[in-house]
Length: 254
Image (cartoon, rainbow, N blue to C red; front, side):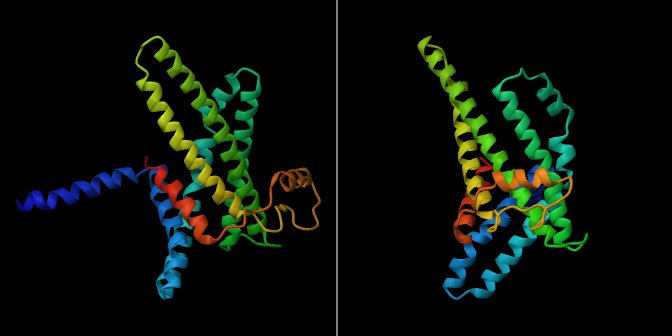
């Protein structure tokens, strides 16, 4: 009985270890660790628990840094993969290939922007003229547009699944597979919209300026592009940001 009693939590820990063994698995838990403290900080401070609120804010920063550090492998794991490049090359020319190409562009640009921002913000490389903030704004812009494009693709897939379900019902066939796909896509779209609120709230107040206030050089077209496509930030409190971020992070487990 003792061995059984001890073995149960051990098996639970082994199952948890398997879930966090991958970068994507760890990111789900770290997402909750990053956003829930944002949600809880202000309410805790409002009831006089300022020390706990400050500790949670610091923990949120640690979790965010851990996620950013883990994403250094994103280029190889999710962006520049043979499967993704082949799928993009084989897509027939049309609007959906343009959407896929834009998704690839923003994913590819997100990586160097975030990596540079993270390294500059932590003193690993020089941070002249707030390089961390400037490139961080570029990374958030890429994240925001990636979310928008994923929502567009998700709505397309949802409408296609809905149409297939209608055809199956008309033929008096089972539509359970389509119904499951629709439920999964509904969760995905809601999750993405929550992340969109978070991304919009993180945009720089003064706009995205990759090259600072006196832009010049070969990256000037990129500077102008990001200045044009980055909207003003969404004026929400850290608590609201934490609410939407926590909701999205929890939906990762759905």
